Image (cartoon, rainbow, N blue to C red; front, top):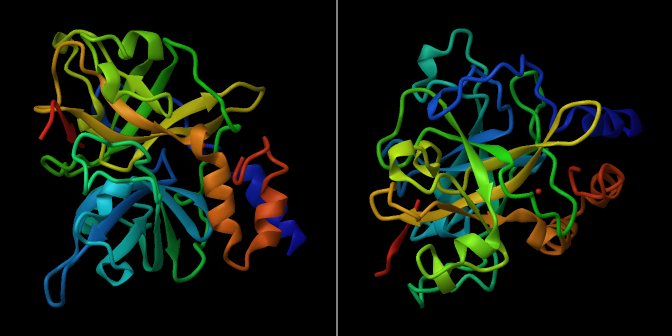
Length: 298
């Protein structure tokens, strides 16, 4: 048991494929983001499951995503979490590495009040508990959380990934987006008081760049490479909102800043009887797996 925990901590957040990049909103190398989740929902049988949001695998039993993904489908029985995907149509992946898991719990931040106040999109974070542990493979493995309170410097290129939720893409996409500092993004000409310190801005000031979190999914990861001799990845952001139409001058994509919710994540995961894994995982970078308005939810 101890060996399995140590092995999990060693491989988490490490891409097992080449780090060669195809950037700017194009197809990702298959399975190069092994923590990417396709969150799929159906309101009732026999209606088929449909891709609704993205998420990040942060533990063998936990998915990190956005709270707004569960408007209005907020019951665990509506959802399944699919990992190991590249093509949205899994029959295109030969052999298929996809595995879908049932959900037995959804925890939304109690401070998420967007349903009552459409001008307040703070605390857009949620945890999904899987009905059974994930079987880790080369194509399926967790991403690390950032250190509590960590803030990525302006200009840091991080990656948003997903199939898109405006028009679902056939293949997993990725786009490199530079971090924009809070002082700039909170200016009146940018996001002004909509932006909070618990959020991250990333993208380009000019719409001519044509890159945004629309290349990703609501709830999906904003992943940054951690400094160190070995390349590991941390989920610094959760895709939250952006301008209507996705691309607009001085309206970059906005993400929930994961490091602002480290205590919330740890406290909620500890509520279930898996403390030995959590305690062991915190030894790695001090983390659990060590990360009617002008805007629209992505």
